[in-house]
Image (cartoon, rainbow, N blue to C red; front, side, top):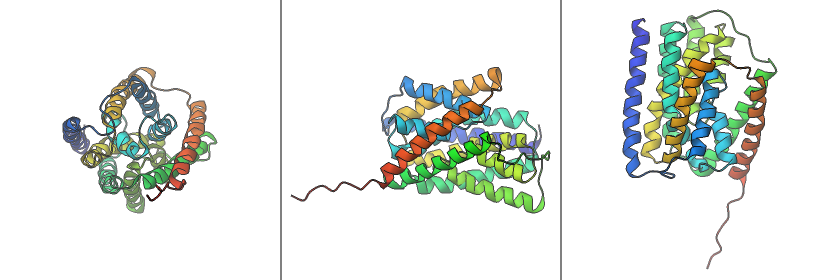
Length: 292
């Protein structure tokens, strides 16, 4: 293993430990409910199982949380960042060591995505409920549109390159900064990263270590900001983590691949319903209490 890749793995592990300590300490004053539930464990298992196979987990998780009222709307972004962190770190460690891509490009995109997430988390963790609802509604619509494009084969097929140089390298870095920030409001990185690298002529397979590595670092970087502001559901985050780790291990080492087109159409339907509900909640007139 080259030194750059080894250093990146070390940074992910250290960031994960730091975020884990902050998460553990938050148990004393749990936000959004202290007890994990079997329902959310099951949700975490299903969504991160799909995430490891390439579907993504943020949009499905957001949709399920909204439709079944498992987590208050304003706590969903932080709960996703904190709760899927363990599973995503595991994915990052697996894909960074098993899929070839230029280590300089990989490390650069991962580090800049983490910076974007740190900046984004500082904003999202302080947003009011309605602003979060509106942003997540838009994020779900974007995710639904991307799923439709995948199923209809409207996205670029990509090339065979495993490295970028010149202006293409700069574009990839800039895109990674933006996508890292958008992760904190619920727009997952998998599909957008796949689109970016494919448009730049890279092999779509190269998106896996880049996306997984970026999420594996940016989530523990962003998580402490949500934890500090108590903008996450403690119990749900524990449950997501438990189910997610099992789902990732099953997908990565046992199942490895599945025909996902029909499942993506189901995700599109669920995501669009949740997006409508989220935007409706955001735009609903605020009730004003009568003056005495």
